[in-house]
Length: 349
Image 1 (cartoon, rainbow, N blue to C red):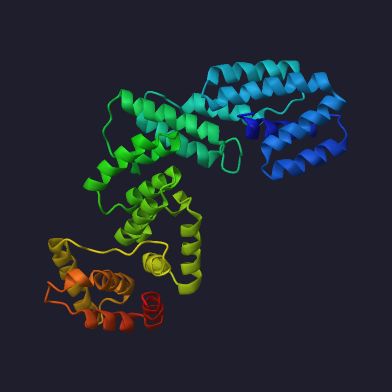
Image 2: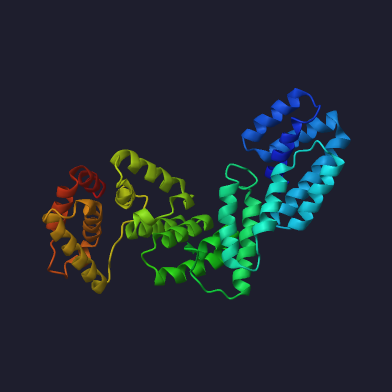
């Protein structure tokens, strides 16, 4: 039943064209909309075996094979199977399957990495809302083929059409390959928040929540507007983003996510222990503080508050740097956002 989602969806469509009892159609439709495809196929099987056993056995087998062909990108075999089934059962609805085959056969070039990326983008836009286009087996097999082409061509690019290559490996289920690609890209493109975000997703998929949250924190710190929010699977982080959006209620809410995340103990606090790194961080902080006091940095309030928070957490190492005082750091936090500062202080008791 590995292709249950595609086959069950297809089979539900056939009820409208069949002479089966309406109770079968209604029950299957409810199951289809619940997305419980495996259960749906099982129920449909029982019903149709009772009503028209021979019809179901042949029809399900043939449609499931079409699903397998499409999901494995064996397009010529899928097209032949579709044409064969159309000839033997003229009332059958295979429009979706036919359109997808035709689309890929017209656009897809498996030996061209750029073409494969652009074709998938166009495919998901063209067939948006079509459950065939969101089939997880098709997506995984597609990106497995893409990564295979990348490896065969020894393509060492960090991006294809401005999309991080590491993301393709995540889609393919190759988390080891994804990690290598993302870590290499982060060194060269530290300001691309997508990279740290995808690395966080990778760790989350591996079950390493602690490392995952560190990566998410780094992503939201580097460039909150650059984080690919749709790629996040961690429910706690998704809830955090929604909570901040409700609480801040303005367009710059995303800038406060990293602060809320640390205060609410979803992200671990950042502590800078290396003195040279701390000096650089303090220099950036002092420049930002100067702009803030001149009234030039209102949009940078969350960034300045976060820098204050990092310096406060790094206090035991900060004593070696005379250009900034711990008490003044906390006073600045209170000036920027008194309410949030109060919550922060409460959590540090």
